[in-house]
Length: 218
Image 1: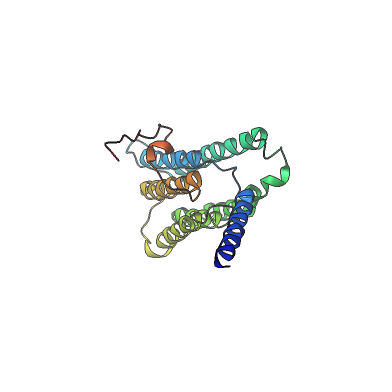
Image 2: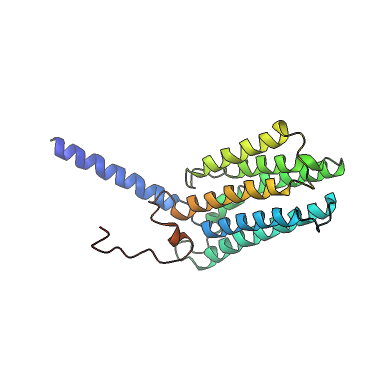
């Protein structure tokens, strides 16, 4: 009797897991997200270089380029997935989780324009980090749960920049923005790529084959 009950519970858990796996949104690429983090880090270093113009507008254009590249990377892969994945069948409804971030992006655009128009450039890093934190909480029912921790990381970073770091400069501390986004996007990429599966090796994340296990190593 106990064996039958355990078998029934196991089958129910397997069915629940299969349903959750079917509902999981697979349109985002972990590698594309991690690469966007590398772009942000490189931009932070370039913008802080002595030869780069130390003007708010030049730095704003620089971060706009980073944002455009990140969107092109992530949504380029998304479009490819939508058109070529047979399980998607080009069903527009499957893009729902990707469209849920639109309100947050719209708020980010409005807040950025408002801060720029009032000359409050030093608040931009904190606002951007906080909004990126909110993005990681959208569609969390169909995305890996680990992204919530990434979202919390961004929210804490945003709070520190807005409240705890009054001397933060938009034109002289770009490394802060680049570093925070590098770690956030890199680990967010890992979460997306492995999607709650065991993390065998970072080699596989970068596209290298996993090391061959020999009897001696076992």
